[in-house]
Length: 457
Image 1 (spheres, helix red, strand yellow):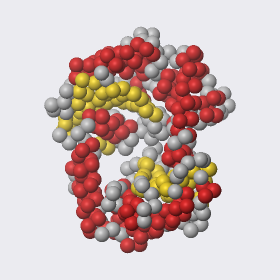
Image 2 (cartoon, helix red, strand yellow):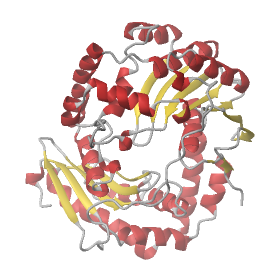
Image 3 (tube, one colour):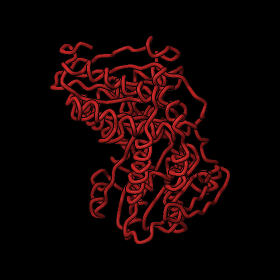
Image 4 (cartoon, one colour):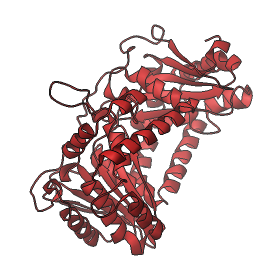
């Protein structure tokens, strides 16, 4: 069976053909890592500046060390607000003039600043992203302006009951694990954040050794590496200079870390329900518990099990909850995997009076897979679904650009489509059943957000 491409931190160069593209990787002596994928025929490229620091890396105040809670999301906003070369309007105007799609995203284990541009603008967009990441001023006035913007963003999310349910579900399942905290912070941490503390977080966490730059599409690797290096050399702070020797930041520990108050209890003992009363026409439900960490040996069997249970319109949850009973418009299963922890869940939104029945059906469908496994028809259908959705995703340069970065920052393994599908096809029915049984036998929680007083949960 084929193996994924290994990405050792100590290997300076790698070239490989994968999924129809030419992938090259350079680990610079400064610790900077640059990965590209040339896509034949492309007239555009997706570029990402990835920093291997996310919301889980923030710290509460301890001794003389300042608090950094909320800093990761704050920086995502502030790096668009100005450098010595461009103010906020200048940055926005430059990207708009290129016709670029540009944005940033904060995640639990990384932060990314990205743009998608036509081939003629790759150099300009790369220099602009590099300037933002390395030379941000983080001025006090802009800091206070963005505090208000972020509070409005959080208020908007608070009005989205599905978002509220998702944040609460992570909090319940992960317990005191840092992954249980909301990515964007909360109103309390954002109001308490201080400009000097966010700047300290920026100076400590953002440097050449934590930076991974990826590009996919119409890009030449050697030219791109030289472009990135020159752009970092233009930074005013020497921590970015590629002429300085350094090493890539180590990847995160893979040692499994427990999370969630119900760890160690069996499912019958830990069927606890957490309700958040909010006005709305529906109650948003998430049912589940701890899942599998990134790179877990069970991940392929879990992928098949998850798809059969709730991965599409033919899935068991969709058929039982929507098609046969008409209890909800949407029902699906999902998972999230991180370096040392993961979670598994089932989601549906329904009228309050139907909530208890939806929760019961979700439990029953998971337990049915655990007890009976999946049919051969379901197995073959899922393999086709995984093959099709993966192939379609790889038509997009954004997907390929992100694949490079997540492999580099995450497991250190780069998977192509054929290798992944070969591993999925090698999964046995017993392995799928065993994964479902493992999930069914552990802590399971229900989070309900909406007019829960009208339910019998």
